[in-house]
Every structure is written in C-alpha cells, then in structure tokens.
Image (cartoon, rainbow, N blue to C red; front, side, top):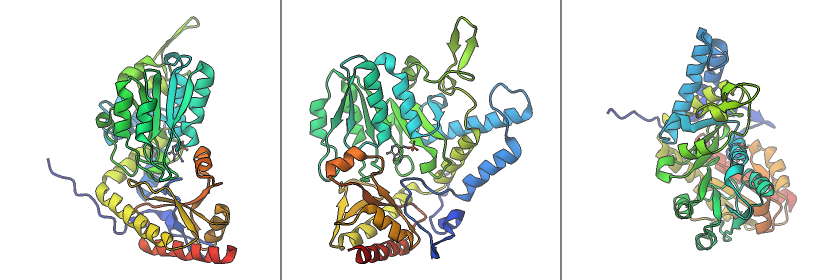
Length: 409
Ligand code: PMP
C-alpha cells in the first residue's frame, strides 16, 4: 500500500482564520487549547458546504437530500471508528460531548450496578467524571472511591491495585488530565480492572486530539471524547463502547430514531448505534468532526506531539526561572499543558492582565475542584499548546506574566 504523504506543520497556522486577529491591540496568542481548540478552514467549510448543499434529516428518508445527509452522517461515524480503531462503526455513538457520553453511560448502567458495589475514579477527574457517578451511587447505593495521586500529579498505582477488588464494578479514569497534563497509565489501569471484571471507562477528552487511541489495544469498555477539542465543532462528541456491553445496557433517552417498533403497549429498541441516538442528531456536528479527523489524519501525528512538547518544554523551562511561580503537575509523562500558581496573586488577576497583551489562557479550577483542594489552591493559570502555536508566542506569554507579576506584587 502506498504511504500517504503527511503534511508538515509549516504554515498550518494560516489554516485557522480566527488566529489572525488583534485582541486589545495585540496579536492574539491563543493558549487555551485544552478548553477548546480553534477550527481549520477545512472544518468550517465542511459544515458550510453541508448546510449549503446537503442538509436534510437523516435515516429513512427516500429523497436525495436525505440520502446525502445520511451518507455524510454515517461516513463521519466510519471516520471516527477508524480514528480510534473500533472493530465496527456501529460501536460509535454520537453524543453532545464527553460530558454527555459519561452521563449516557452512568444513566444507562443502573441495571448493572447494585448496592455496595464500588465505583473507582481518580483524584484528578474533571467534574464530568465525578458528578454522574455520584448520582449513579445515589440511585443505586453503590460507593464512590477515589484513587489517590502524589504531589507530582501521578496516580498512586500501588494504592489503586490495593483498592480494586471483587466489589469494584466500574473504574473510570481520565486518559490525559486537563489540569495537570498528566498522561495516565491507562493500559495498566484497564488490565487490573479487567482482572476483577470491572467495567472500564476512559475519559479521552484531552487525549484524543494529542495521542494515538486504539480502543482494541486498550481493551477498555468505553472511550469518550469531544469534537471541539480535536479541531471540530462544539455540540458533538463520541462514545465508543464494546458491543456486548452496549447491547446489555438500556438506552438513556427515548423517542424517535432509537426504536424498531412502537405500539401503545410496548416498544422495541433499535440496533446499535441508533438505540443510543434518540431524536434528530447533530448532523452538521458529525460532518464537522469527520472533517476534523480528516484534518488530523493529514498531519504527521508524531511530529505534532513533538512540536507541541517543544513548546511545552520551552515554556516550562522559562516559567521555572521565575521565582514566585509554582508548577502544578510535574508528572514525568505528560502532554503540552502547564498549570501554575504565582505566590500571593490570584490566577484570575494574572489571566486578566495578560489578556491585555492579547494572550488567552484559562484561569480557575478547570472543573477539577477536588484536585484544587488536594493542592490547597483556589485555581491555577493554565497554558495549553496546540500545533498552531509557536515559540515567539511562548516568549510573549513569559513577558506578559513577568509584567503581571511586576504590576500585582
Ligand atoms: N473531561 C476532561 C478531561 C475535559 O478536559 C473536559 C473538558 N474540559 C471534559 C471531560 C468535558 O468535556 P465537554 O465539556 O466537551 O463535555
């Protein structure tokens, strides 16, 4: 087979229209990629093209537009399926995003979870991988347990091994922490959970855009992510599930699309994936995520990772030179996310001042309040890098932070 020539990253920035603007009179420096990535023209055009030429409702329609819209929707499912190496495209459920995917699982699992069963998550989870499980525990009487981490922001894997037991029914872990940048040893976590027949859920919201994901190799039961963090649109997300478990669990929303037959007495559910996609889906969103996957596939992913890490290493080295800065999250295996606090200055104040210099970073608890409690801080300043950032922007970030410290100290 002829190898497809992957594109290099030079000029990639030109493909992102939003980056070419001034904020407060300065060139925009967008370093909030962990919250949401910007969109390349290819994704914007795919959505525009869909609405201008192909839009109609999907499935069951006999007219040409409906057939075209269905083809576009289902071909995106195929792309997502290949992207994560799912054995079958019908194991890919389109959702609104990672949060929606986790809620779908937690809402659908009620019949498999019993009183005193244990659900394990880690101390670094996003609220969306905490609250749905708390609610499931409330409904079923199951118990939520938290796998601890060390000060570097790494899971204490020995403690985890001690915690897993025959009572463990589900283990749900973030692949790549949005706050710390830690890449978790999910292979090991999944293997251990499986030896106790626990269901495994991996929150891939941050990982899918930066790491190669192979759900068959991982052998997890569920893997979830959001379109908007992989250069795709908001309002579309993915739930990959193993076929047997998707067949065992009940749908969590009911209505059109998800049925095979309805009478006033009873309803039979549709096959996968439609059983979990009640109502008219986000067709344009699916088209957009398909285009974002094409975009990612056109790039050399190893090169993307190396480049993002070179920006990370550059920024980290320079931040560590600033005396009053403390880095939060020092895992030896991490991605291009840097969180830090400045002694005596609230993260929001830093964020507000550097915005005056056109620099967009996220400040606050990053939807990981229990993690902030662990570190005893109200929040962090977080800079997160993508392929369209550059080293000149790292320098602008450092200059702006130094300025903010001078003004606020
Ligand atoms: N998990 C992680 C690790 C995240 O970073 C996010 C988004 N910040 C989510 C879950 C939730 O994703 P969404 O808001 O797209 O549903």
